[in-house]
Length: 382
Image (tube, rainbow, N blue to C red; front, side, top):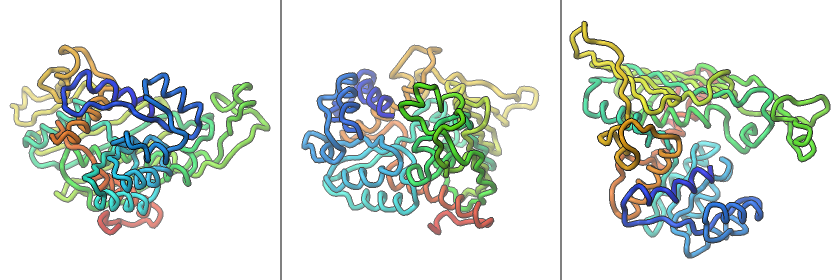
């Protein structure tokens, strides 16, 4: 994520015009050599020996938090107390308590410090267009939301990492993937999830190979672990499904898996309304499928909107019509929106701050409790 974010900050000023031009001032990681190498490669002015030194640097105005989940709260709160703006990766925290502390720190921040959360899919032109169609009333009253985010990189042969440790990650597919589609559902509809029923929390892999310097030389962990290789417990969910009800009465389903064989990044959402429906699949990220139920029956059918026209959100800043966008452009557009806000302007599309992201974390936590206690949960009870 450090590479993705660094690229976004560097590129934003080339495609967007704004008064607040970002410069990569300092980088810090857990390894000094890594920090130094990153600084040289990505044009960062200097490398700090630790994240707390980075925060204390007077040249730093905004801290971009790309560390593992368990450090989000510690780094973000310290940065806010130091009067810095903060942009943090998702999910907000590993627990609802951490997320609440971060939201409170944002509300109490001095010197006008602002917070942002990298829900990057909000900046996908097709997703933003979906939101605009819904808010224009083109779908009418929303009745049904179907969302799933499926990947397959969490297969049994994948080596152990912090993402498979609940103390470091918080949860598995749920926090990693459901956080995105919960935020997307809230973003495009402008509605809130008020009740959830955690239908299923599944863990398929209970231990994974640990990759060491010697095991890397033997090729362990990347493909197939060999007998005698050191192994470590995996303590997170591999798949998580739940049902939900929206405040305005719509029903919804959310499904996340990191073991859905053949799905590389199937972030998909379908919104059904009384006047029409829309479908989005990130593996075809430049397209939005649209059903207009107000047309005569003989003219109805799913149509494909290629979201590459200058009139589509964010597109006019980049390439000519028909020249498709990629994963990195969402981050570039978000970096530009952050810069616009910090310069006193408005973002092209709403940004998530810590308070907004806390609402998403309430939904995630309610689903976990619901799955384990086999009951419906009110999201605002947390």
